[in-house]
Image 1 (cartoon, rainbow, N blue to C red):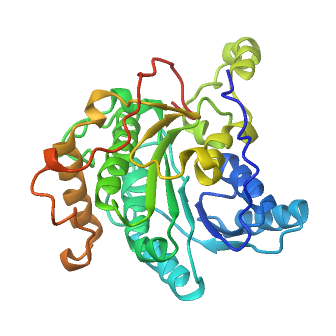
Image 2: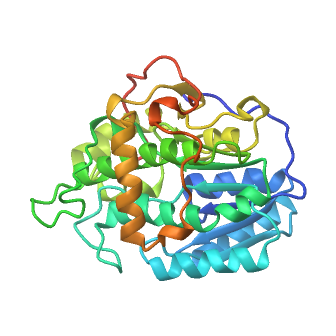
Length: 331
C-alpha cells in the first residue's frame, strides 16, 4: 500500500539540492532525508517564519548545518526570478531540483500575475523556476529535476482557450487536474530539450499522503466524516515521511541514473494517461507557458537542432504498464 522506502544509501556530500515548499509535508521530509545524506539543502518557501522553523529543526535533527530557508512565492513571477537570481549568484552548483510545492482544489483566485492559482503555482511557477536554473543544472551535470505530479492527471484536460477560467464556470477539481496534467507534459517536453546535457527530469505521483495540501477538499467537514470515515481514511493514507520516499528515490537512487522523461507511480515507472503522451500538446504548452511567464525567445531551451521532426527524436525511456490505482496526495 505504501510503495515502500528508498533503500539507496547514496550520500550527497558536496551536492546542492533545491526543494520548493519544503517547510511542511512531503517537502519537509524530503529535505530532512537529503540533509541526513550530507546535502546542502535550499528550502524555497512562501512563509519564511515556518520555513526558518523547519530549517532549524532539520539542522538539529540531522546535525547538518547546511540547511537554508529562502523566500519563494510561486504565485509571483517577481519572487521566482529573485529566488533564482540568488541561487545563481550564491550557489556554485545545483545538483537536484525538486519542484515539490503545490496547491490543491483551492477557492477560485488569481496569482499576482493574473494566472489561475492552481495552474499558476503548480505549473507556471515551476516552469519558470526550472528554466531559470537550467544553466546551473547543466553546469552541475549529471543532475536531476523531479516534478511532483499526481494521478489526477488522468482526468486533466488542457483548455488552451481558457487556461485561467475566465470564460467558463470555475471548477476547482478540474483546475487542479489540468495543472497536474501540465506537470507531466512539461516533464516530457523538458526531457526532450535536455537530451545530451546530462540533466534528467522525471515526474512522480507520490501516492495518497496525509498533508496540508488537502485542506481545501472539505473531506472532514461533517460530523459523520470526522467521526466515522476519518479512522478508515487514516489507515489508507501514508505519512509525509513515507510520501517523501518517491522524491528521495528519484533524487538519489542509482537505479534511475540516466532515466529521463518518465512518470513514476510512487517508485514504479508507469505509462501516464494518453493525454499526457501527446507531443503536440506538450509543445504547445511549452510555447504558451514561455509567453505567459515572459521567457525571452533567445534565452529559451530549444529542442536538439539536428532533429528535423518529432518522430526522428531519440525516444525517451519507455515505461511499461499503466496504473489504474486511485488516489494522490490531495487527489
